[in-house]
Image (tube, rainbow, N blue to C red; front, top):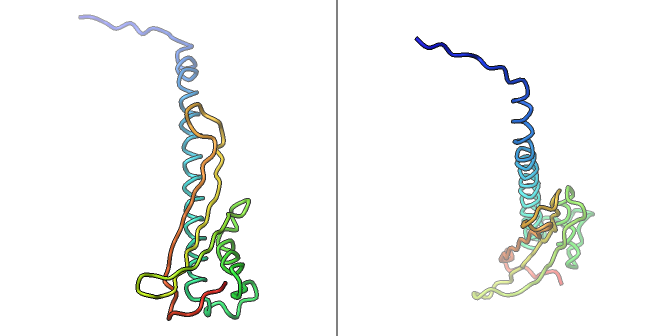
Length: 145
């Protein structure tokens, strides 16, 4: 019968932590950055939707003092009102056009720059999220200029 001898290794846990700690920190920072870019993308999606809905049917926001539907400033204000959590506010583009079936359409685009927490080799330090949506204007209403 063989017996096992228990060896005393007092510094083994500290060495294992020292070896794995850089990898664990990397995983945590990458996870936080991923969560941040996911959140900014969701807010950008909401902002482009808000601007497109304003351009889609501007009569629904006629009573609001914050929006001016006589210019494209109203579309920009509507999109940026849905993105108040982003600093700085995202850039908004607004164009009008006509669909193939003759209806007026509005195209709203929102872009936001995202900066990483840490500059990692091989990973871009900043990214731009762009979202664009084109909607046909309700009841063929005239578009704001």
